[in-house]
Image 1 (tube, one colour):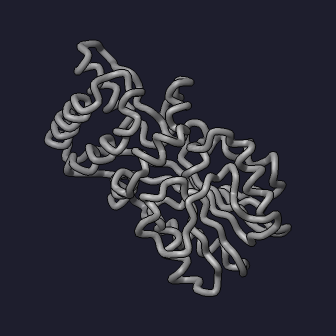
Image 2: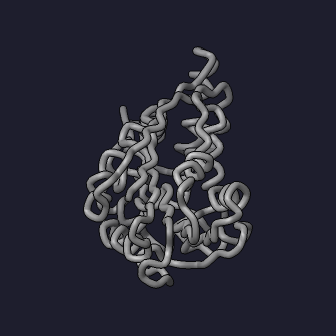
Amino acid sequence: MTSNTAQQDAAVSDRTILANSAYADGRHLAARQSIYRWQQPQYDLPGIVVEELAGTSGTVLDVGCGNGKFVSRLHQDRPDLQVVGMDISAGILADVEKPVLVSDAQALPFADDSADAVLALHMLYHVGDIEATIKELTRVLRPGGVLIASTNSDTDKQELGRLWARAAGDVLGIPEGPARVSLSSRFSLEKAPGYLGTAFKDIRVRELPGIIEITDPAPIIAHLASYEAWADQSGVPFHETVSRAAEIAAAEIATGGTFRITCRSGILACR
């Protein structure tokens, strides 16, 4: 993973892009999630969150809940909890189990000390002001409550970054093209403890390393294509680059049998 330009960072946290394009529905998010079917070892991320909430009762706010996979699991495994899913996109909330709210993480419609747990899973890199948002999440959290955050490492899926740069270079006719937009770089696994440490004394990091090996380029291309909302920040014709990446990935699979991707993400439990 590479660092974004200032313009790319602004686009990653642009509310209009997020609500009306990137997460207008669950299609792009589902494409990014689907590639983990081929990861070893497998991690049950909703199950890990359920484990972290073992001692929690009362109200849980899933801020930036996306397509609701964590909301659904909590309703299933912890029906005793009052779970509220929130996102800035009304479209992506359409199929999420109720109750849900269209809400900005930087201005939550909840009173001080009103939640027993807050989830901020793979979303803090999308907010405009990360420090102010953490302060807002802390405001609604009761004393003794837990904030569970998650994100990717700066080294996550570097093979896809190299694939993109090579494909972009081929499209532009240069040795190496511009780096692809990184969603996580503003709040990566390496940066997260520093941000969260401004509000929490006890931060426990659970790293989730893994290897994805794929024998069909389709999931790789679906993952790359899911960044279409940020096509204008790619510095290269987006769809042509995705098509060229498909050709390169297919050739690598034909030669070596698989396309290998190294993953590293993590969950942070903050108290």
